Length: 207
Image 1 (tube, rainbow, N blue to C red):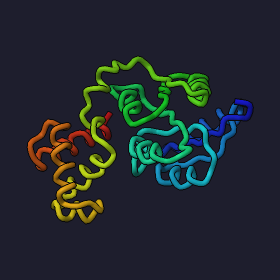
Image 2 (cartoon, rainbow, N blue to C red; image 1 turned 135 degrees about the vertical axis):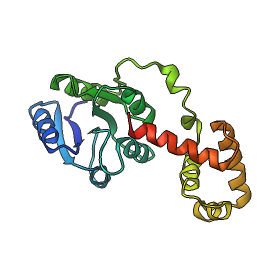
Image 3 (tube, one colour; image 1 turned 90 degrees about the vertical axis):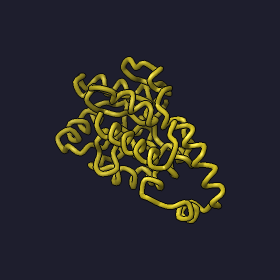
Image 4 (tube, helix red, strand yellow; image 1 turned 180 degrees about the horizontal axis):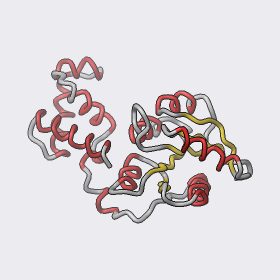
């Protein structure tokens, strides 16, 4: 890349955000575009600015890092994401599953974060060791975007008719999607699907 890498940072901790900002501003490879303390703030700014790499905290208020990545990966020219967090339990796997391009542990020195962002900007995937077999066994990842939207709507207690109206599709199409979704999640009815949804959501929020 001939020009500096455009970076945007998001972290709820002002001390971490300040330290990261100083780190990137001292490195000539990067140009710090903006910072935010919330996922919503990041989302609002990244829609207006040219950003190559977004460095985010997984537990950003209020959407959370995983949801932020999921929302933006559907957009054209979305930045590549590096999750900057505690290298604990399954967080690197969750970050990769959500669509992040890299993970940098907070326990490492600042150089590791800078180099991870440079590699991600160059098109690389940068993660600590992850057993990829675990990525392939998460049923949520087998759902289409439409099915994920439907499952979230289903969790609010919507009837088939209400789902039809909410999603702009016929009730027969709703039944078709529900049937496919139940098969993919290995559940038999909407109650089990809703239970699966909240169980999966709890896992994402509690790495």
